Image 1 (cartoon, rainbow, N blue to C red):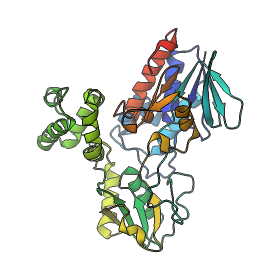
Image 2: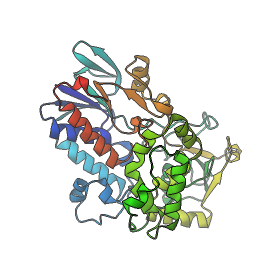
Image 3: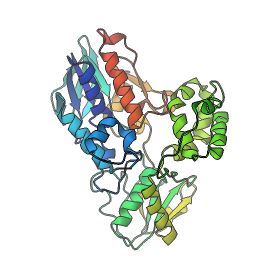
Image 4: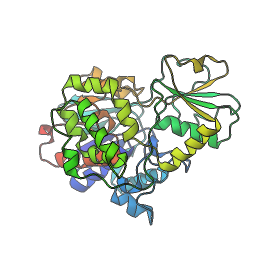
Length: 402
């Protein structure tokens, strides 16, 4: 039986490893036009750090990385190297091509490629990563706009003597600002978003987590998400180990809480609470935060909350970099997503955040957002990969839920 994995980033490689371990009889074909490892882990500069401690990336990574501090934030490229080592040890037929459509037939599924022969498979794993960045309407068409800062060479044309406005104030925006500053600049950089919220900072060393019993007192199923967040905030404000361990202790429960919440409650959270949650959940490594603080103190970097369009875009000569993060599924430039929806093999999932599919198609990673809340970080993706492999190890995979 052949299983096709579309995507050679972290989700695809971790899925391939889990399938090889638990389903040794499956033939694996991996399809991706880009080099393996994923865009997030191809960042070449050593100051692009993982946003999680080395220990959170898995025991295998710790052993491979050598004698490192498990609490350290290592360069992202190290994890990319690790993923490529994993892939090199797997019996995977890697196709450097783009999947453009999937069709269903009597013998299973056929993955149609942009350049090569189609791949026939009994099942297909969609490990596509997050949808690509969406350029805000007020910046679209602007001369010199950088629509995707992680495209190869995207920042090379930025003039160090001209002001830069970065659309976004999240982790990508911080990476863009520090990358440009490391290259040398005489003109300022302004990070702009509706709320002007920067990611908070990891503790240099992790604090002691609160007792599970204490966390359990606020995580009652059926409580509105707003009430849950207030309870978490109250514990965080008084916890002697700092607020960060409280957020980390809640994380394993988040998907169950999200699933139990009513759709209207989730909508309210998405409108009013999600960004505040995200800046506390997805944090900067302490060295990154310290470097950004120095540049803000010197005036080299400014952070603004602004309307749409922000006034900073009106000045002539301003260069604009889009760092608003991933969009929604149909915003993606990848033709496969639109084709899946048009052909009825996928539908837009809850709240428009991800996709819904049914066997013999499976989703892994960011495109499960909406059904899940925590689905983008390595620990969750690793768990999903193991669950997928368990499902595909059953004799009749067509009966397994996606």
